Amino acid sequence: MIPAAFAQATVDREGERGRAWLDRLPGIVAGLIDRWDCVPDGDWMHGEVGVIVPVRRAGEPLVLKVSFTHPGNVHEPDAYAAWQGRGAVHLYERSDADYAMLLERAQQLTLCDSDADVAVVGGQMSRRLAIPAVAGLPRLQDQADEWAAELQQNAAEFAGLLPDAVVEGALAAIDDVVRVQPEVVIHGDLHHRNILRADREPWLAVDPKGLIGDPAYDAVTFLKARTLVLVHGDLKAGLLRELAAYCEAAELDPARAGRWIQLELVRTTYWGRRFGAGTNRRGQPLDPILRTLEELAVSWR
Image (cartoon, rainbow, N blue to C red; front, side):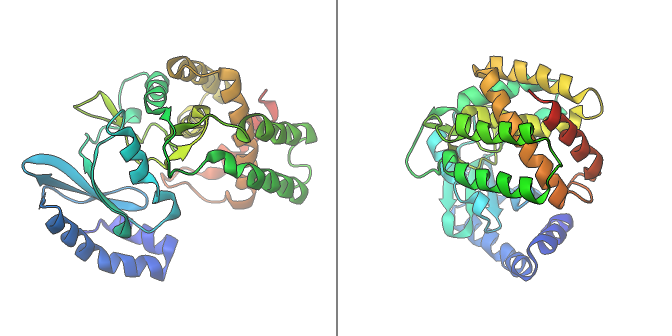
């Protein structure tokens, strides 16, 4: 039942903890199906850290999602509960002890595999998901001190990798856009593979981190994923074009979103120097992509 590629990736990433969880996973799924009065309705699928099991309850097509016990998954059900189906799949049941949810079933077609205007749809989704803050979600602004310390450490360790003015600009961006942010629910990992074609609405978001913060941060996660598509052309021109379309659709200030991007390019450059060997999870070589982003970090204004 467990997809082989998912099982191998879990063991590679998590070691014996992952193997032990995989051993328990069929029993977890069977217990939840019984508890929530569901019947299986297709082959298991998977994301990066969880399995998706198609089920039906009273004839309605749903999915059971069970994730590995990862900190990034803690607030996913809280975000769904806050949105109540507005721009995202409905949450029907949750078992926080199992990192499990019973969710509305969307289609398997992602935004990146469609012929839609990706940046426009992404911006529209951002605007739809930006609702007033609710209790219980972490605030993105609480990362400001950690990010500043990380940048300063990396600038010292990799001295000369980026011009001083570029690093100073990134540190200034932390003060300008990270330390004080709107009291708004944001997705936290919005990108073209986390937006699915659906029936109840044209598109629905999945896999949120669930944060309180600046909707412009979702522009960063969205456009960061787009670099893998745009990198084969004029990356900067492509990003600026999609940034403008995204921000217009999301009703965001493109200058503020640009400051977020400036910061993320610098953080990604240092991450790439420290961890960037090999390939990403889609088999693309990381080194040329990261070198291109490094050049873009220097030229971005």
